[in-house]
Length: 518
Image 1 (cartoon, rainbow, N blue to C red):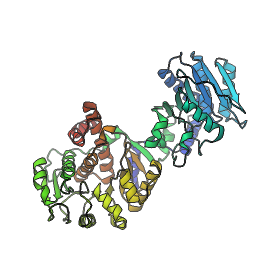
Image 2 (image 1 turned 120 degrees about the horizontal axis):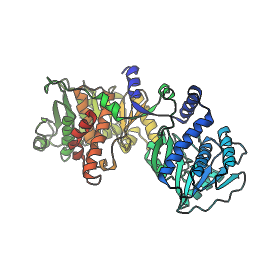
Image 3 (image 1 turned 90 degrees about the vertical axis):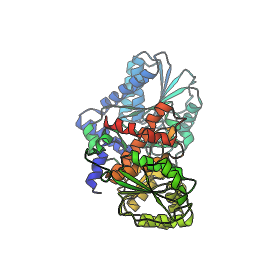
Image 4 (image 1 turned 90 degrees about the horizontal axis):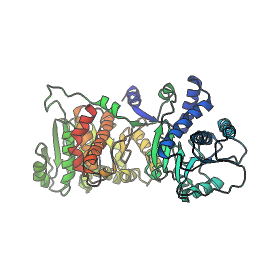
């Protein structure tokens, strides 16, 4: 796919920037607004103080821990503003190395001049921490997005002291100790466990990973009016899909269309005893708009599938209980393979043969991925543009070794997508679409109720239906995972997360389409 198309895709999503890029956008804003850095810090502090004021009243005692850098400068400015609003704020500024950033030093002086802060203590050597009761709110401004290594020594001890206290913690930009991107080798005991994180302008990559949620608490993104031009000019490796832009991807349905023009999909799925996977994928494929769906499945599944999905065309394998034969795909516009397929050896041989001979876009899921993991040499035979949809354990099996954390897994998925020239959807709370050019799109829709058997089969069916309709691979992946999660969100609103099952996602898919078209 031409690079210009990728550029368009990444203009239709919320960008996620690295720590270096964040500093660059700050500097661009300072130079082109123009605005002094201390005034930009004051602007951020006002947004932070406003957000804290919305969460806790002026009767709440506040204790601020400020570091020597600009995150500490933010914390000092916030403390001064809150004190001016009547909050009782005690401030501890850590200046162990006798070196403050320029803006942090300026805000220190402003606190001293205002005389509204209840207590201001600058720590240069030993520190006797204050008592932190259940009625206290800690403002964490020790370290922000510039942190590049785990906390050690006194700062690590302070973090543990705060975490063990009964106080509520609100972190500025990031919980201190958490790095913006890669925390694979971080010391997790030395990271602040915030009750709320007030991050500036954009979400950070580390916020999207499961193992970091324990540190973030309730997340709120504050607009501090960084340069829109600077943001637009900065290329992002990572982005989050947005609803308005997903709406723009929807293809109109021609009033004169018929089943022959709306796409013909083939689904190879369902060993005997797992016919339900084929049924859910087929139903979802139809609900995604495909004009015709054929299911290739073992002979014993015939009456089950014919009864459950009367709209489907059943193509029976010669085997009774498993798929053992590949079929021609010249008449099909999209192929899905894997849901409930089983992993016997003749199925594995039929699976790779089916993928190799495919003349249309391919979606491989579930047992197709497990069989590829068992025959890893076959992965070099996958066609360019194939869509793979593994959950974390399936990806680790395909990769050959377990990953230490979500960042490492995402990095390896990106590398695999580039190497195979494939689209890899790494499924999770923020499902990540890894593109052949190395960029990643995160999906914001979906909920914990969708952690149920069959949910992945439904996603496979939706993406296959969109491919059959004529969407390109990148579009089908983005729109498919967004609609899948959105249908789950609408279903959960009506049914609750606990009682949600995979077929509910299919039932609510029409409402998800309606939401996007509205």
